[in-house]
Image (cartoon, rainbow, N blue to C red; front, side, top):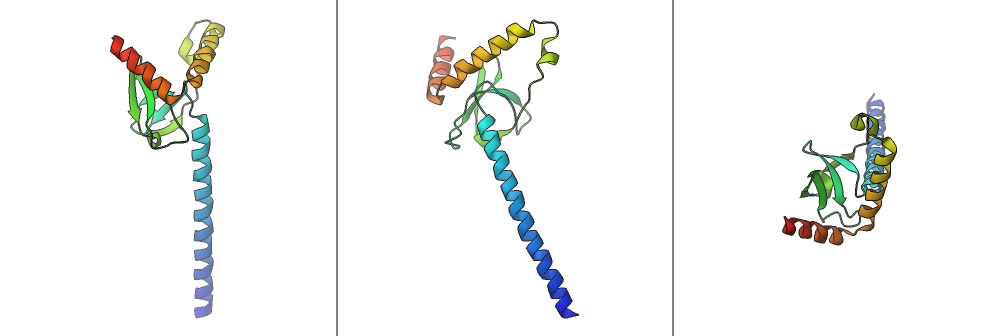
Length: 133
């Protein structure tokens, strides 16, 4: 009887170990996917429930803060782990009657401009903008 109990205990321990490793791999894959999708111009949801648009983010150095625009002209620094997830845009609901082609062209052009900037260039541009106000 004791041998059966030890066998069941051993099976449960192996199951828990394997399940934990599987979950860790899934979490790491999700973090890597989030890091590759977090580029300037992408709308994100942060841990505190705030929505914003990424202005600058360095996936290599996770200790440096990400710059997130939460309102036009209002850019905040947040820890990279404060970004909960990428928000998939639903362009049709946001536009309501605007010419979709023009808006998409403008969005693509502004994303390309932002993606070409380094985080240091972005900080310098934001400092210049705030000094001029």
